[in-house]
Length: 140
Figure 1 (cartoon, rainbow, N blue to C red):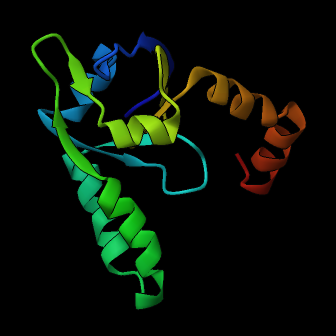
Figure 2 (cartoon, rainbow, N blue to C red; figure 1 turned 90 degrees about the horizontal axis):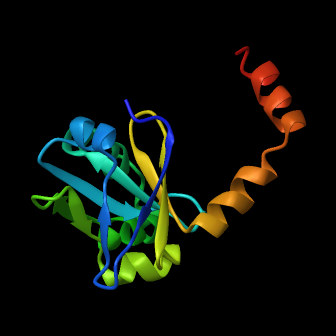
Figure 3 (tube, one colour; figure 1 turned 90 degrees about the vertical axis):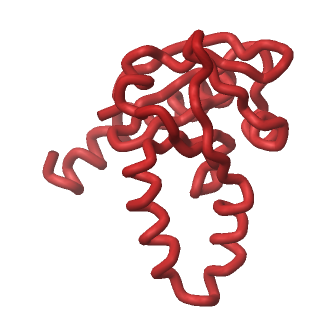
């Protein structure tokens, strides 16, 4: 399970250190892709969780072809190097606006990689009132 928030540098080559707690959950080979919603971030899935998402995407009707193309065309299989870093492809770095730093945000069965400014904006949009509404709506 992925949880917590971590900050790490993204070097000029596009390499980023994956938090050690996240690396333990990922396994050797894992997937990265653009967010499946309109948010400007990346999602990282273990191979097992990618298989779950893939099954859901395959079940979508033909009219969802554009959506599937966006997800599959951005997806890349990755492995950490000996120092625990990944090389984030240029296209994905550009999509998420990643530069010198990245925020790694745990989301239970996957984690997200954000530009820290975008993450701070996203995080601030979820007010305490909104938290109360969601908790009440879903009986949490």
